[in-house]
Length: 617
Ligand SMILES: Nc1ncnc2c1ncn2[C@@H]1O[C@H](COP(=O)(O)OP(=O)(O)OP(=O)(O)O)[C@@H](O)[C@H]1O
Image (tube, rainbow, N blue to C red; front, side, top):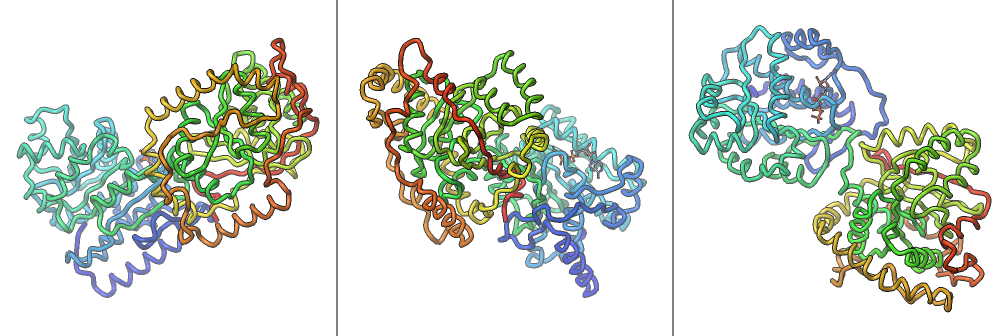
C-alpha cells in the first residue's frame, strides 16, 4: 500500500521474491495464464511467519494466538500482495499487475492471507506517520453481516496485540445512520462492511467519494464467489468511480466460478491469479467436466451416469441435449414397463448414455449396508450379489456392455459405490468407473478408498486420477458450458420431468402389450428423444477443431481405436432369448433380471476426476 518509487535494489529484491514465489508453485504470473498451480506434486512445506517478513507486532500477535505456521494460501498470497507493494510506484502505468485474485478452499486461512499483508503495510505507514486520511485506508467487503462480524473479530484479535494503534470498524445495514457516522469518524484505518452498506453510506453522504479517493489504498472482496448472489453487483458498480487508481484490489474466493470472473473483470486490473490446488468444483464445473468427457469421447461407451436426484438427472439430460448429446433418464418415478423398455433399449445400444438415480433407502436397506460393509472384507463378488438384490431403481438389473460407470454425484455411502460400479465389468468383461468428486464429497470418497483397500483383488482395483482429461480440454468448453448450464432453468427441468412421466405413462400400457407381442421392435418408443424442440446450434453441437488441444485429440483417438478393436460400435440386435424374464403380471421383470445375473464380476479401474483438478495432466 505504501507506494514508493522503487530503487534498483528494491526491484532486484522484488524479482528475487517473485522468483521464489513462482518457484514455490501455484502462482501464474500472467493475467492471461488464468488459474493455475502445481497440481499437488510438491509436498506441503512449512513456512513460518518470520520467513514471510511480517511486522514484529503481527508475529507476536500470531504467537499469542498460538499460530506458528502459515497455511499454503498464506504462504503464497502474503508475499504476492506485499511484493507488489514494494515494487510498484504510484504511477498509473507501473501499477499494472498488483491486483490479486486468490482462490483456495474454505477454511484454508484466506482471511489472514489478506489481513496480515494489509496490517503489515498499515503498521509500516503508521510507524512512518504516513497514514492517509480523511477516509478509511482499506475496505474489506463481504456478502453478509455475519461475515462482517467474523472478519472484524479476526482483525481485532490481531490488533489487540499490536502496540501501534490501528482502528478497525464494522458497519452494517442494521446500524442507524448516527451509529455509522460515529463509527466512521476518525476515520478508522479499516472498514469491514457489505457493498450495499458502503454504497448507501456514499449515497447518503456519510462517506464522501472524494475522501475515499484520497485515502483508500486497498480494497478486499472476500467470499467473492458469493458476492454476486447477494445482488451486490450494482452496489459495487456504484463504488467503482470512487476507487483511486492507486488502490490495490484483492479478491478472495473459495471457488472458481463465472461470478468470480465477472467480479474480476469489473473491479480488478490485470490481476495475478493465484489458485491453490485444492480448489473445489461447484455443480456447474461438474457439468463442464462431464461435457468434456462425453464431447471429446474420452470415456468408453456405453456409459451409465449416476446422479443423486431426479431433478439433477433431468438437468444433466437437458444440458447434454443442448450440445447434441442424447441420453435417457431412468428413475423410480417411471412406470415399470417404461423402465424395463429403457433398459432394453440401452442394452441394445440404441443410445449410449443412460442417466440413473438411486432410490432412497429404507431402514432395512441401511441395515443391510452395514452388514455389507462387513461382507466387503470377505468377498467382493458376494457383496455385489447381495447389493444387487437390495438397491433401488437399478436393482438387480443386468446392464449389458456398460463400459463406463460415471459417478456424476458420489453415492451416499461406500456400499452404494460398489453397487453402482457393479453395473459395469459384468460377466468377466472389463469396465471402468469415473467419479467426479467435489470437495463436499471428499469424506465419502475417503471412505470408498478405505473400503476398496480392504477388499481382495487389490491389483485390479485401484483409484487413480483420470489420465485423459486435460485442463485445456476442460477450459476450451468452459464458457459454452457455463452459458448453457445457466440457460437450463428449474422450470425447464420440472417441465421436462413432467413431460417425460406423462409420455411414459401414456406409453406404459402400449409397451406392456408390445413387449409381449413384439419383443424385437425396440423403436416403438425413443427414450432419448429430445426434450426440447429447439434446434441445436451448430457451435454447440460440433466443437471446432481449433478448440481441441492435441493431447485431447490423441486421447479421444485412443478411446475410439480401442472401441473399434473391441468391435462394439454397431448397435446390437436384441436376441429374443435375451428377454428371458417373461412379462406375466405376477412377475416383476426388474427383479427377474436380477435372478438371472451372470456370475463373476471384473473391475478394472476406478477413476477419479477430483475437484482439485488433480486428474489433469
Ligand atoms: N496459519 C494458521 N494456522 C492455524 N490456524 C489458522 C491459520 N490461519 C488461519 N487459521 C484459522 O483457521 C480458521 C479458518 O480460517 P479462515 O476463516 O480464514 O478460512 P477461509 O479460507 O477464509 O474460509 P472460508 O472461505 O470458509 O471463509 C480460522 O479459525 C483461523 O483463525
